[in-house]
Picture 1 (cartoon, rainbow, N blue to C red):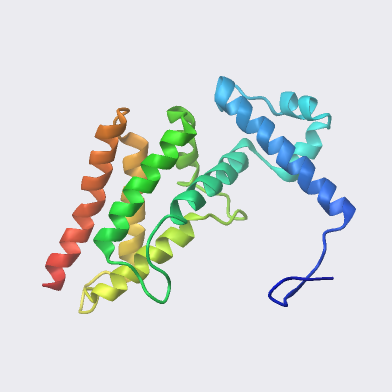
Picture 2 (picture 1 turned 180 degrees about the vertical axis):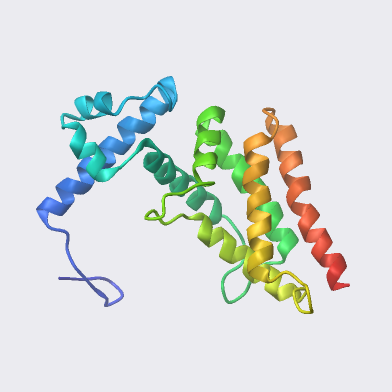
Amino acid sequence: MKKTTNGVLRAVPTQREQQRMTTRNRLFDLCVAEFHRIGVEKTRIRDIALRAGVVAGTFYFHFPSKNHVLLELGNRLIAQVVDQLPGSPTEPADLERLLNALVEATIEVEEQFADRALFRAVVSSFQHPSVEVPVESIRLQVALRDCIAELGTTAGEGALSADELSTLILTAYFGALLVGPDDPQERFAQLQRTLLFFARALQTAEG
């Protein structure tokens, strides 16, 4: 056991666990590089395993399919987005402010990623995630839910709950990323219009 700076005891990874994580990260990096080079469809697992110096079974031990690699990549990208959002669980941000920040952070991360086709493939993987893979979009949904709950517009017979509304906004968010225009400025404007529609509709309902 290792004592951390805040006094919490944490198990030190064994050499075997460290080696396993090193192998996993290498396979991930090689696979993503191949996605960039020739696309997801043309990427072959046996080629990745060969370059990593392991058998194909080792790849499948860490990533049962290419979609699992896309989900891992998506988790890393969306974590970058969520980390830039304002507010906290105890002090949720204003919904319109949160959605504006979400648009800006998403386009910034996508532009840094610099591969529109692969970015779309990553977004698509979130539409049907593998049940055993936790997705970072949960953090985004929770942030949206907390902001909506602060508005107090979900009470009353027939009203959608904050959870349901956050799911609806998240669905529109991923949908806009999939079908949006290729030009970054046009994509920014469309994504902003899509998300702010919900903020303004909820503000109207609150009034």
